[in-house]
Image (cartoon, rainbow, N blue to C red; front, side, top):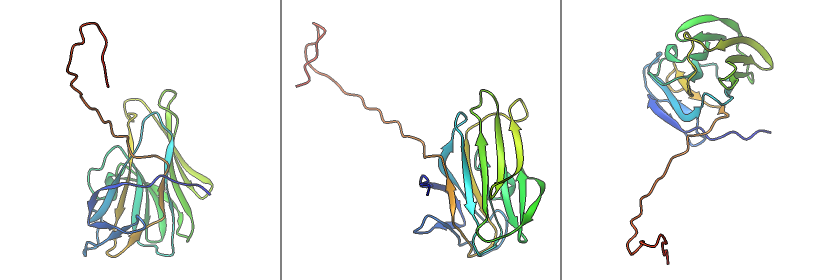
Length: 193
C-alpha cells in the first residue's frame, strides 16, 4: 500500500475539482481542448518520479502525462502522454502519435516515469501494468532537461478523471521576513529580550 502526495490542481479549463480530488468535465461541449488541468506539483530535473492512472469501468476519452508546462487543455500539448481513445491506449509525444499500445481494460495501471537525475541522462518510461512499452532517452539539444508537471485533458462532457496519482510534491514556498532592530549595537552584541 503506497501513499501518494496530494495533487494540487491549477489551470482548470472546463473542469471542476470533486471532493475526492478527481476532475469532472463540466464543459457541455465534447472535444479536445475543452477540459483539462495541470498540477502545481513539480517533478524537478534532478528528481525521479511518475504519474499513474488506474483505469475504471468508464472508458471515456482522456489523456494524461508529463509536460514542461501547461500550454492549454488539449492532449497534443502534453509532452509525454498516454491517450485513451476508442477503447485503446495510445502514446502521444509533443502532439505526435507514437503508436497504439493495446486495448482498454478496467483496472489497468498506466504509468509514465522519469528516471535519472539529469547528470547521466534521463529517460521517460511508459508502463502498462508491469510491462515497459516504450522508453525515450532525454538529453542534448533536441530534448532539454527541464522540470515537469502532471498535465491532463478530458474529451467527454460529464466524465470524471479519477484514480490519478503522482509521486512528486508541490513546491516549497519560500518565506522571508525582514526585522528591524533598534538600539545600540556598537559593541557587536544584540539583545533580543
